Amino acid sequence: MRTPARLLLGLALVAAAGCQQQAAATKAATRPPAKVNLPPVPPPEAFDLVEKSAAGSWTAAGLRKHRTELFGQPVVVEGRVVEAYRCGATEGCLPPHFSIADLNRPDLTLLVTGFERKAEAALKEGSVVTVTGTMQKAVDGFTLSEEGVIADASFAAFPPK
Image 1 (cartoon, rainbow, N blue to C red):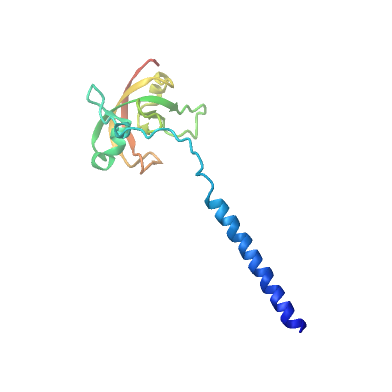
Image 2: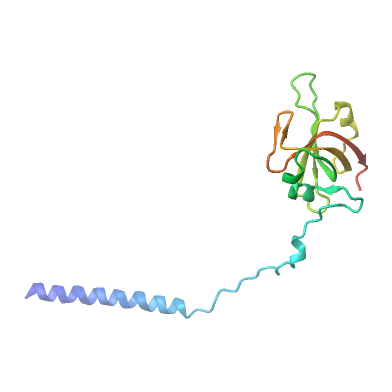
């Protein structure tokens, strides 16, 4: 007799636990939805990239967007100097180079190299530059297949605004 009583008691406990879980699930399902405070969705034109400047030169965003068509081609691009490499040693220096950012999208950058070291003095971070060069995948030990590299460059720098 003890065995059937234990069996019934065990079944009753399992059923009670199941009912408690079902009650908790029902209670959770009846809670109001969580309130989320998200910023508004930007308009579609916010995602448009300005590909060329008013002067007709490429922007960094435009050059990166069309890089596969432009590899090996001469290009003129306008951007802001965000980083300029300076070598303090007389030996073991990397080739002169600097990075420019798109004037409208500072997160989009390009590497510029292939100019004479003496031109480094004209580079000031924050300056707007117009660079003339050739769009390449790799040059002088730099490989940036995603963005490309502007090689054999010359540039005109304008003071920071």
